[in-house]
Image (cartoon, rainbow, N blue to C red):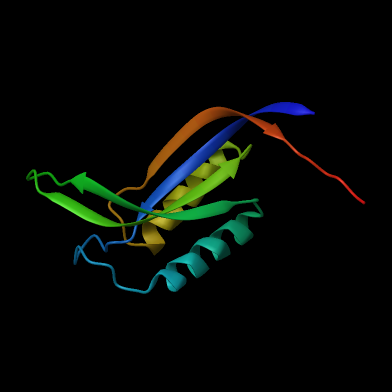
Amino acid sequence: MNKESIKTTIYIGLNDSETMSQSFLLDKYVTILKNVCKSYHVNFSYQFARGGFFQDGGELTEENTLTLILVDVSEEIIDEIAKDLCVFFDQETVMITREPCSVVYVKEKL
């Protein structure tokens, strides 16, 4: 059965907002991300990415990024998760995108 859903992606940079460098290995960030998702009891997927952003002075900063993908989670819960990750990863901001998507669950047994 095809279901219309909302896919939300939260982009979390891994450079510390103060030092502008990554403080920990990726595994530590993933552990924090998983614990946040577990505490909100949401299904999730994540990916690693590289990204860049322009600081106020115009300087480009590149960093490792975690993308957290959530489907059909309320905006209120998403905002709370984003706030938690922003604090735990010491970010100035995190970016949230929302888009409609089609979800199909396939199940088959032999």
